[in-house]
Length: 348
Ligand code: KG4
Ligand code: ZN
Image (tube, rainbow, N blue to C red; front, side):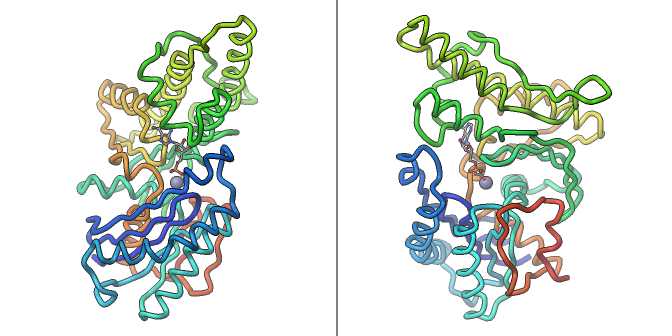
């Protein structure tokens, strides 16, 4: 077991954390959501510049919060894929420079593997095999976690990611960015049965539906049509709480249905959830209730570990480090990279 300092700059959070034996010694997250909020989404160039301005203070804060000096750090890690290239470069270049300066091994980490490892930080007993429902701003996938670095994708979205659907629906309701937490809050004051919305099924050529794949673009369009209809009918004020609750309930229902079906079909007893949408109260409630019915165990990371942070990146890096995996200093960054290719990041 090692002490790892990790940097996460794949999107709009500048984060640095130190993890030792799966314990978070420090975790600093500087969110840029206010900066991007005015534009209704992340502006890549602004994100990179902001990472550059914030990274050094996050580093000093993480070290002092943990009360550690560089001598006590065994390895330096950074998210290297997938994400915004300019943003990733800030974290990776900083981590490589620090690794060289302090003569420590460098480890590149796949952002989605980090989201899987968020559950390890909360559940000490957790070990593979298990199923991870990964629901973030850019991804919605059901992953079969076989071992560290070894993953199989059993289901995924064919269009929008779950978090993206939350953000787009929030935008069309003029609620602000990021949409997930705002919709979640409003949904708690609304009626989830107020409007019937489509679940988004993926048809198979041989007939029937794909049991584990998702589609959220139809749901988003249905919300748009509903809003247009209500506006035409001059329903004022717009029943935003009921729309939010009905939308959230539909997303939670679909995610739960597919994940439980997958776990039952594959005979997997443990489910973990990761990514920003794992913070959603509707999903938590729905999935926990369904899992209990089927005698399955579900683990949700604590809220602050669901959204982007560097502790989950450090935790993934620690497991790789313990297995003797390190990355070459000429490792590049990638905007897209399948989680099934994680082992390509390491020389071992
Ligand atoms: O994992 P994450 O922080 O970043 C990515 O890797 O994408 O996820 C961000 C996404 C955003 O789309 C945000 O709206 C969504 O997670 N999110 C939520 C909640 N909190 C964050 N979605 C639904 N309910 C929430 N409580
Ligand atoms: Zn993420």
